[in-house]
Image 1 (cartoon, one colour):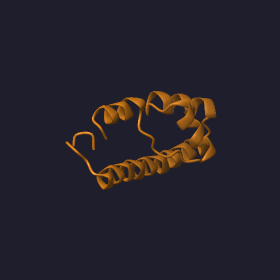
Image 2 (cartoon, rainbow, N blue to C red):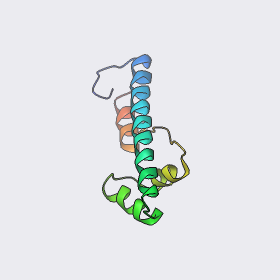
Image 3 (spheres, rainbow, N blue to C red):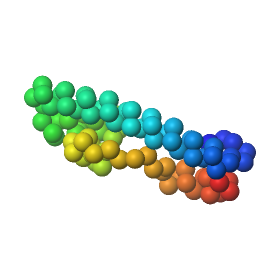
Image 4 (cartoon, rainbow, N blue to C red):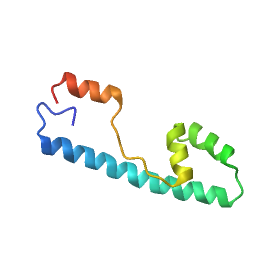
Length: 88
């Protein structure tokens, strides 16, 4: 969306929905992996290290996996700032 010259509101909304859908799909897959590794006997600490190092997840995301609570997509501060500078 940020690559477009002058995106419409519908294009911005569509881009957000696609990003959130992709995030939800990834969350579901990660949750299945988390639960599978837990059943194999890994501790929460071991899982947190793996997901932090291998998947690059932060503390909030790891806690959401553990609690089975989806965190919706929210653009980073950098992306929001870039959008504002572009007048989006």
